[in-house]
Length: 62
Length: 171
Image (cartoon, rainbow over all chains, first blue to last red; front, side):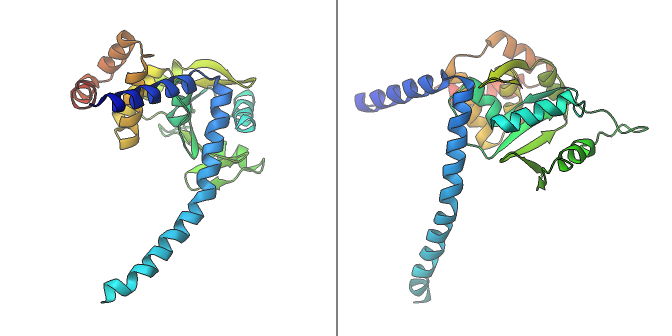
């Protein structure tokens, strides 16, 4: 593993440790925010996927 | 989520459930960094259907529906959160429910499974997300190794744990 990669992994580990140390109530608020964001993005991603299929159709027809 | 937990506590106060323990991703979040999830897994102790060895979630559904909380697939939507009520499926679940720890989330009392029981259950279930959770717990350094080993031994999961260790943790 390169030195840079080692540093990146250490930083990630440290961030996870800091998040884990938050009070449970605060962590549940973060979980709620992540869920809300996922639900907000899901329909948009679905639309993008559909668009992708339509754009790709002519190529597969060839 | 605070309001959801308050409803679950009220269910216990009203005698609909005798005791409960939060497991799954929300339970893991008590010990680890927050994890994205769409539902709350609540293990509940239920009485048998009279004259039968079967347990029924019907009283829970009836109680919640009378308060306007409606089922959605295998969950019930309570104050904006999907809650899945799970009767213990085996001795490990029973033990995890009995030994859950009392804690607090923004002033709301809540019972959460121990980290060691969450790991044992994740190991038993074994989906990809359970494997990730098990590895996160192992890496966090918060597990009581002796306690975990005893639980795994009691419930026949030690071989599975050793395999997991060899495959994912001993690099």
